[in-house]
Image (spheres, rainbow, N blue to C red):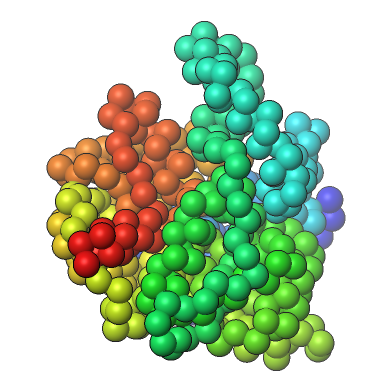
Length: 429
């Protein structure tokens, strides 16, 4: 650990904050603890003190940055246009350079980054985990209380394990458009998404093809680097960004479609992430401009495929990295409301994070659980029959909360609802 604090962000960005307090009601950690230092303006003040050499308590600074979810609700709420995303992106690598973490903390973080960003390793791991589920061992372990002897982080990881299915077929390199082609798009497969949520990728490809899009799926694509960037592992994030840019540049697509909010928010910031890389700066900016959430792409196309009825009262959950980091909020609702039979229910405090936040629910399980239960309470105040979202991490987080509350409910990705509607439309024609 260095004894002399180093600047964590530019003075201009720090000075944009006028400490008005509009961010406070939207900040999850401020709502939980009511501490100024656990609010966006409080963290910005600490960054400013640190830049000026007046903040020398490394442990305190590191802890307040660690507890930030990076949900960016403050960016949406701020009337002064403070770029908290850029400030946090500068602070987190500084924290990782200086933090003197315990052996257990370091080992757990290494475990996460040795598995999650690597689809091949995740796939290998899915087999024993799938058997653990299929044989009923998971339910037995949960009922027995054996989980209670594990560290809380490992307990959280076990509870967040999604239902695992075997025998899925990888998507081909190209899926032709149905009817007259009107768009050529690339599809991001993701890491956790392709291994544990392959059905969402398949539904995405089907819906895009049904709407006249030729879907190109670069087989060499790897991790987008979102988890590394959110955790301050800047070098790994930059390497992942370069690899992904290379993979998609070779495909020659006009648009890159993303169905996981966390990935989308990271990829749209590649221009900023690689701004000082002379070989990639311009390519990264052009790449980021091509990145679109699936809801943005579909909302921008006049519907071609007939929509069949899907009788469903659906509570739509806004993923933070979609509504705050990407500013995408209206498009998913428009798509849902256009499906016959779907009734969209709004969730109270929709701007507040569910506690998932990448790997936050694994690193900070206590705070994440409080936020999860708050979200579930708001969901249960609706008469919804299902939860719909655009981010797999959110769906897993909410599922554990509903299970804990004894109110399990159907959870669907937005594109799965659209896929079901298009299938119904084809049957009725």
